[in-house]
Image 1 (cartoon, rainbow over the protein chains, first blue to last red):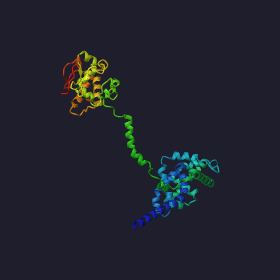
Image 2: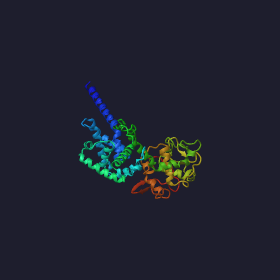
Image 3: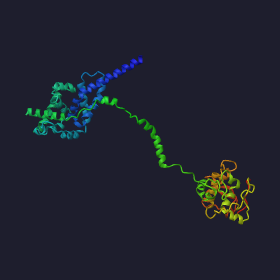
Length: 167
Length: 239
């Protein structure tokens, strides 16, 4: 009887863990893939997110993480750092291959898209959070675990670089 | 300028993010639900060495038949089969039966058997030998020419080939037991795959017709034989 109860408990625990994983994936997968696409390009985005998620799952299901969103975004960022070495040329090629689906912004704003590809990973991360997620510098600093001044500096340099591309 | 820059960055960011692929299904669930080892892997691994063994055997072929007088004699026996039967059972009114010990009874000593095949009945008749083989044969001796003429094979076969056919008739068709006391020495001297006498004849190193010596030395081994000799002689009984 004790064995049955123990097995039942193990089954329930396994089911709970599986539910947590499914819920986390459903809530975050699309956003993480968009973020990863901005960091490393569409070709590597899915693989990068899957790898980051698999690495994060044990910590996430253990209940030790206060903010799963922040944890997963940092995991994707770290994974992008690992991946990006030697991939910058591919990323530029991927980025040039992207064609606007609704509004032809490329012609209007010059080669900003190409200039984004030349940003550092840290600069690109800040640009994503500022211009896509509309986060504040303080919020981004907390998310990335850096000081607000660091965020401000990355953003400033990114804008300077992109302004040159805008002409 | 700043508004234009912000608009450009915002539009470009949106453009890049909109190119994001659809996320795959939950990788953890997919990994846990997947059959990690396909069901066919285990039997395949078990059968792989067997297949490898069969493959190698198929490439190398089966073990070749050991060469020797019995193998050679079986191929040459077709020359005798028309008169004595394919299995040595004899043919009514023509050749005598070999099987079931009959030829062993006629020729207890292999040298008499070899000599008779070498010369045939005509030479025995000309030499005045009325009884070829064992004169004390159980069931009666064989009389020269009683069943018509037995052709000589000395011009058609070499001495080694005659020995091979004789070995086939004695051991394969008539049933002499190579391990028995009666035949072990004869087998080892004349009919085994390692018989040095047969090898020496095959290589042309020995002549049993013109060489009348009964003591022969081959590769340091002394062998006592009765040569075929220049003409037929009386048959003999087993000592």
